Amino acid sequence: MGVQSVDCGTSGPSAFAWVRIKVDGTITRETDDDTTYIEADGLVLKMTEYVDAMMSGDGVALSRRTPDTIAAITEDGVIAKARD
Image (cartoon, one colour):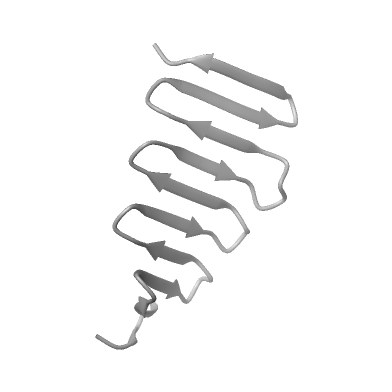
């Protein structure tokens, strides 16, 4: 399948991944193992079977969630704890 252009953006396969670029600047990259979102403001969200990770567009906030733990770094400080 080639590149598809629709009203909401463009999408197409790219070396083992499916990439979508929307007109608002949002990019989505999907493979069999993970999905990565890049928002127009620079926020990056990566989701896999084992972990969800986020980095804010300005790099100030980072977070990671696994089935067992959660960790975050923000302007207010750092937290890391087991999920109940």
